[in-house]
Length: 307
Image (cartoon, rainbow, N blue to C red; front, side):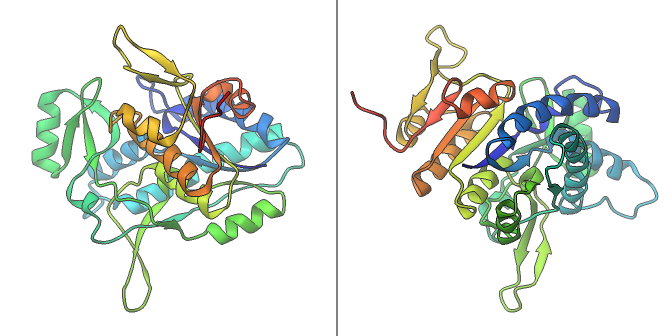
């Protein structure tokens, strides 16, 4: 079976942790354990988030007085693909002796006129107190919005149209290679209408939506979205909260999951299932193997079984 696995950026750097390399090296072991068990049985392409990492690099770039201007988000995204990809390759090679593993710097096509460029919504970087957030807005021209624990920078997040290297990833999977790709949703690029030339875009693409597009392009059988909860919950945070273990795309959309939390994951799973009639699932990183085998997580199906 061919799987596309989307791992959250917080799997390597969780809220409240110092953004040290040693911390991320330690955390990557959890990701490796989750992926390695599945890689022994299936073709695997792994995507990953980069919110904490690209936020850190953006802060460093903005503070660097040697630069005439901070590095653009597309290049910072490429840097995070190298950073996270290197961590994953080294630990997965140790766990899967003899398996070919590669990390690719991957580009994702977006439309230059996507309305997401005019409405920044994607959280990146650390949490700031209100006063500091206002100062950064004034001094750096950043957009900020309130997150769960405070104020964070938000950046444009256009919709992914396709992964430039999808054909190459497909060939690598056929050869038995485990591929780490589309990190941070991929480096966002637009195309020139006349020449077709690629140009980097100042944005960060949602990694789950890119994973859904990539899974469709690769003709994957299963899209697995891993996060920090065991499954979706309806009426989350209320006395009526209950787990959602099995659902169709239409049922998930009717539930109205919040745009800035589970919404993109739900939409990614729903789109993949609708467009391919494959399966998708959302669940805990530590239960990845059990989710694929139907023993954990929220499974998203084209149609619910009828007794």
